[in-house]
Length: 464
Image (tube, rainbow, N blue to C red; front, side, top):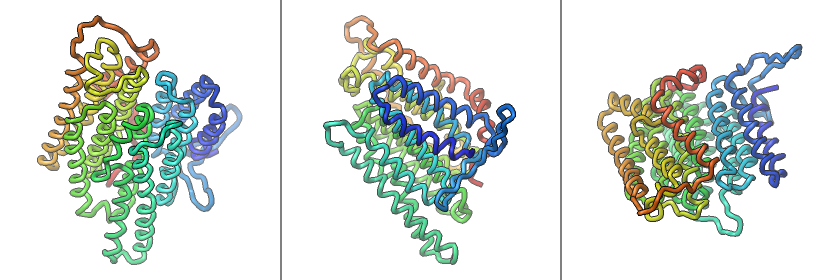
């Protein structure tokens, strides 16, 4: 038994079985949730590489698996990602019935998670680009609406993400040839350029980010939250591992200023575009872009504290996106386009969905007492020590994004001359309340939560 079999092969094979059981929705949901919880608990508690004892039987949990001359390795350094991704997979699968998303979301979701896990585990890393492309192709059935042509956002998502694969492969091929003659600076620059553009396309980094808000407008908010919540995190981890593994790139005098400049441009431009945005679905896309810009800034500082801040930020990031996607999905289910005009006075008709929408956006921007506040504060403090000018521009971008949230708050809270109603179902209210309480708890007691998952940070890749 090996960890790649448990976390890659098993979920993928299970997704194939669940695909043929799509008509039995309750069974699929139950299997998806229970599988995610079991894999999460196994990743959290089991020491990879140790011996697993079940009565008189002893099973060694190996950490590598060789396939066609390539190795897949999942060690203790991957425990945080596995625990994180399967915890939120259980939440997403549990909310399928609340949003009326097709039951095929669960088998395709499991397949995507297993393929992205393989992308993180494969060695050499170049094959990660191929596996990410396979995951993108596996997500296409979730992005298409039967009977309707694909929207511009869907087409741009597929094209931009697919263009990244040949660029990364070509850059990696150049990089492999340079190892024989490391003094060839011209080819070294070419390799870094191709790899940089490839990762920029995958992460929707400026100037390749225009498709993100368009995608969230074209597809179901619940699906866009899952896709845009998972893919950028996996790509960021692959990029972080790539930078950490190359000493000359890590110590380059150009890495820090380039990442800082691009991250700052993303935060400021996203804040400005969000400030004039009128559709809540597009704000979900801008939230993802804002998170990616802040993540680049954390990586640019190349310190242990900044990288740990990046990893901790994944949890409030995914929690906020999940609550935002659920709130938008509830409005869409009731044939309400979540823009400023249609959300006027909606706090009286859909109080819990409206509260979830506003609180999740406030958490993204880092409003005090919410989950995003501790990580935003930690990042700004570190930026102020390294470069006060950049910290000022980042703060300006966050304030601009906050103005967009305040516009929605004013519109949603308008009195419309009607009494209070409750448009959400009981199960939807329970999920929304849990999401709101989680964001409040993470914001009020950040040290308590970080202390509970501290053992998962021991073996994380840190930029040294």
